[in-house]
Length: 191
Length: 206
Image (cartoon, rainbow over all chains, first blue to last red; front, side, top):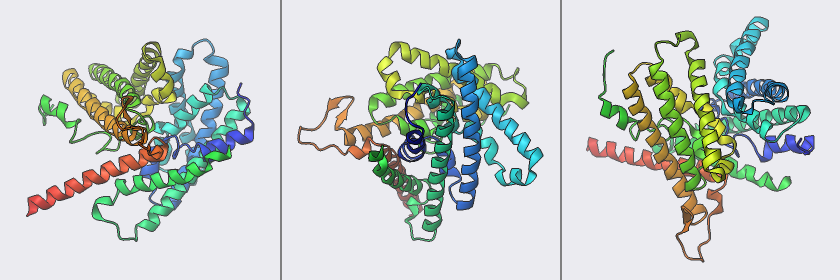
């Protein structure tokens, strides 16, 4: 059992060890869907939702099922995440078609998002209990959303500025991400 | 099945022309996260190389038995099995590296580069050609990781493979070992490649 306080887990996951900017998890959506602020927010919310569900199911798996077979961890986590996303997709489609339309392609894409899988693995390695895992998931989700929205705002602004032709696209995005990551390093002393 | 490429092209394509990290931007998470030293980069590449080759061979030899509807889940399962194997082997033979890489070994499962090759190539081609394609992609991934790891270790620690390169008065740029350095290094490599591409085009036009 980890003896960190809930607040330090939350703060660490969201700011100091931000999943995207410090641990490089979830880079695909970070590069792919960070062109508009609105889509970035939606992607972030969908991520928080799935992260919380993953944390719950990873805890159930670890506590009741994988105790005797830790070598099946990677395989069972990936199956659970994939089916979870599928179920969530079906439920949302049934309950709220409007939300389903808004989330669109982002929901299935979450399956192969390393942030989700990373969360399950980290939670196991640090042996968080139920509440700690939940806090960790919410913190990580908010951190992802924060990074996505920051990135999208900077990219929206930079669209209007005069950038050399070679720097357009991925190169510029990576340099911006580097600067953001530098800025987030400033929080490192807080914990 | 129409053949557009020769086996040699299958092998070479992944190394530079369609380099998974530098051109296609796949598998960025491991490429940035563990390349603060050359040794870690090498361990990561070796594990990924093993997983992609084994999965490609298995997927291409089983392609007749995998129904189209569940093919993605089937590929993921194959990949997850080999990742578990790689994880155990590293733990047994290179415990130091295993500890340094930590959760990122398990994260090879969600490396989109590997799944991408299964879906785009191995599921449609013969075993041999899939293996060649996997080897090419694996080498391309290794080159990109070693480039990143090399730059970051030389600038950030002042060593290459733990061998000190500069005198004792060298002040290391610590930022290159930190996460921000990963983004910046890859950003500058891509900017540099864009610059040469642009010059080549200008040269051809003139």
